[in-house]
Length: 258
Image (tube, rainbow, N blue to C red; front, side, top):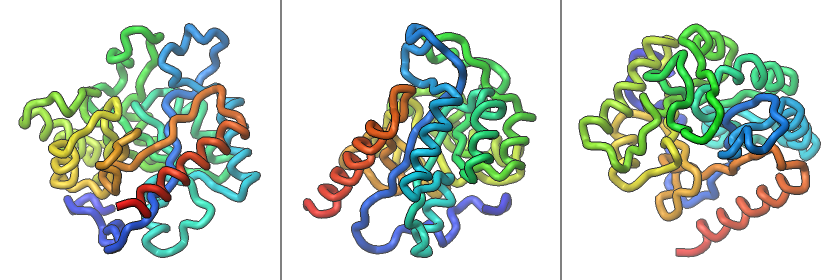
């Protein structure tokens, strides 16, 4: 998307029919750890686990891509074999641990960052270890490498509890800051904590984003509330297959049932 427009490109407009939503995987941090107590929220996978999961996708004829790339491919009828990859929060280890593996296996991903917390840590996770967030330079390097940068808001706040002026700053303010940082107006948004409601979804659409990612949005599922599958350290091939089938069944029900 060019930096001088505030609207989503025509290629991202939903076709006028009910269709199954794509399979999108949700990651956070990629780092070494040995004790589950070091990862109380289940947000960390080791580099070995990530590579194993990427290889599993490849073994099934699938390739991980950014959500923007996935949606454009779907609009053009070329999405067969593509799976969305997302990484929330903008941890510094994406640059050092995840990016080399994505490149090795011919994948891209969407990294959702917090432009209001660059260069600090995950203060919103009181029980977990401190994890450094990317600096402005790191975000630019990742964008320049061909990965998609999306917004996760400014400060990782529950937007359903935010006043209207705060909601607008989290949506529009973060988008403008990312444009200043990367030179590109981000297409994608990711709801902090996965929390959303009708007001937040409509505000996200009105802010000019082309799509938004959730976790389990229920009846709000759609382009502005894409469901995602959480991937953990424990997810080997068998568990990933179960999660893939669960997604397919959920989407079949969503499309077929009124």
